[in-house]
Image (cartoon, rainbow, N blue to C red; front, side, top):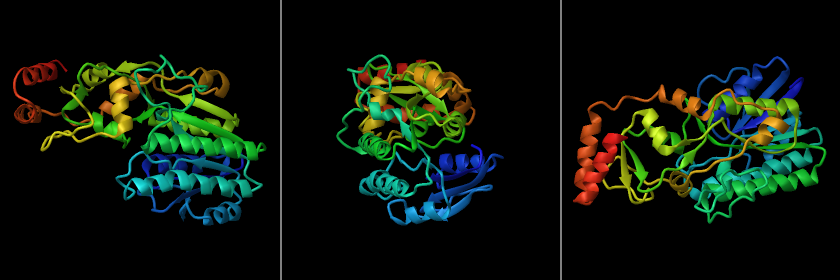
Length: 343
């Protein structure tokens, strides 16, 4: 990363801010410019923050003025809650990426683009291969986050064709997990009682938050173009995950429906599919071509995440009792409570 001037998008969120701060402290990096519409919370270290909206062409002026040679795009968001709705989320993801790529195309000094993508682009269904490789076509999603990511990757490939002189690296990251991770999956796993869809035990892979930063920094350093699956070693089933978290579970017929008055809220279509069918990705290219080896396995990432969980204690019995009153009466309730006790 010698002599780099790096622009990082999405620094108002912890993942973007933490990476930008760490990059700014690297002795071989000249400057790091963090860009977002909202100032980052907490310590930003040696990062220089610029309040700018990547949906606006003004981002081209920032890249030119700061003489940026490396762009790290981390502002693709997975939930509309903090953005004001689904339409705003799509604008930030898709329109924002288009404007950023247009700005990079106009900047002759830009030589490397790193895009943080996600394995969510593969989708999750009962027709999936055992392990997705990077040659698999992104799943054609009806809408939401997965569709945004597929569109974004399409625009990134178009940019790579128009600017063959720029090294373009796309990192399809597995679900990020760690002590400070805030995400839909992390929120789901922090619940005092975890709902699971009846009859399914999906496979899961995790990427520790520190390995996410390591993967991006490694990609900047080695400058290897292409698309790479990034995930920790190993796979856990959801039943193994909840046992290791020591959380009780309740089987439900449909994760897409919340139970009125309960601790269960509806989950997004992408997360619902993952928690039903699971997903596995092959990381051979990550190791052999990119040359990156995560420090944490899937199990180790989960264990580190678990250190921050609050013990449920007596709350569990009260929650289960409340659920018994809300779920359909009869054998289904008894089965659910028995399963919760085993979880």
